[in-house]
Image 1 (cartoon, rainbow, N blue to C red):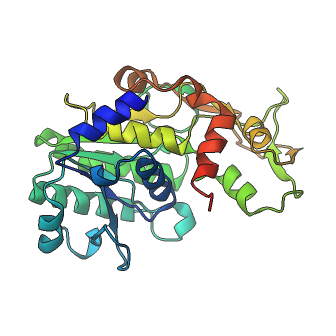
Image 2 (spheres, one colour):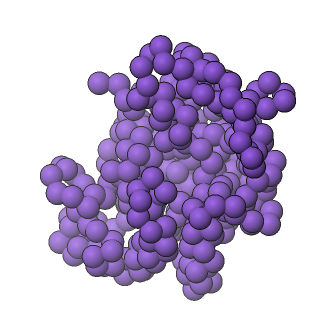
Length: 297
């Protein structure tokens, strides 16, 4: 895996990747691991607020073109990775995901960036097990519907020649509800996890933030064109009780509510073919280690 990172770094030495959304929860973790891998010169983080050295100050919604002065300072980009988006927790209209995506695509076109990795979500599928990229999309919540609408509205950019890949990302360890709750809980305060007849908690597709950083860097610098859609998660799903145990945090079972799904998972064979993952990428303990590395002082 380190060889993959070194090869990606070499490919991006002269044409860095522009990371849009570097101040978000996932963006911060990805940027941490890129920098920890020695890729400072291979990525330029984008921020909307001033005061961060080395970044590109730009609000996509205030002007779709990249600021000319800053763009010249950083040079031409090899790819744009868009992790910025509107989540339910923000309280903002979820339709903003489409406006943000279009603004980033327009900026990429104007800047001559031919490849864009655009963060979508596994929520576009709805419930199901081992869902491949070709599975029917039947989202059951507003977030999934908004991300699917974003994909559908932006498909023409791919048809026009842009190497645009929609990343249907599963749960990112540390940006998910469970570990987010654990992060703010007292050490002896248990969290509550839906527990099904199997005796286990919900089984979901997860990925650690360092693994995600490696995947994004590898895809951004891959010489061949990318697929239209790609599921992003570790190969083997994780149960939430196992994740809590790996975090060393107490938890208590609770009866699932109406409509709770015991299993919602992705088939990530296409990702593994493009970017083989480390053996421990599906290990809950490794995912927790990767998350905690981003929060260490």
